[in-house]
Length: 189
Image (cartoon, rainbow, N blue to C red; front, side):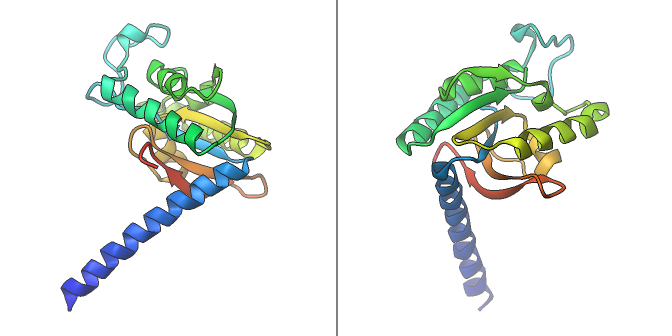
């Protein structure tokens, strides 16, 4: 009996994930939403190496070929599903910029509010306010793509998606968060 209940729970969880993906794709098709994604897969590690310089990609953890492939795959999915991306903003970290460029949804504009919070607790409250304001202010008609870091997404929503995957948000300026989560998206659809 317990095994049957566990199996049923597993199947229900799979169904919930599928409907969340469907809800996210439907929201993006309708426009006026925000797609916040985590950068693609990088060289192993957390944070950046000693001597890291924001203006020098060679000093940072960068995408590996698998991260580039999953970023391209997400871009292909968005085009196949006819998702209109009106604006693309990215953390200034090279791995986020490259992820956004490989998605190929438009000109990538660097946005400091999306910069990595990992190891930078002094920036947390300011950047969370700035990210919430960016999301809440989005009106469309197309969608806004934000390329950022898992640490930022965890701090903002308590969600840390896989690499090159993300969360679909509906701007909600009337809420303290500035958004409502409506679904998820991954390179797999």
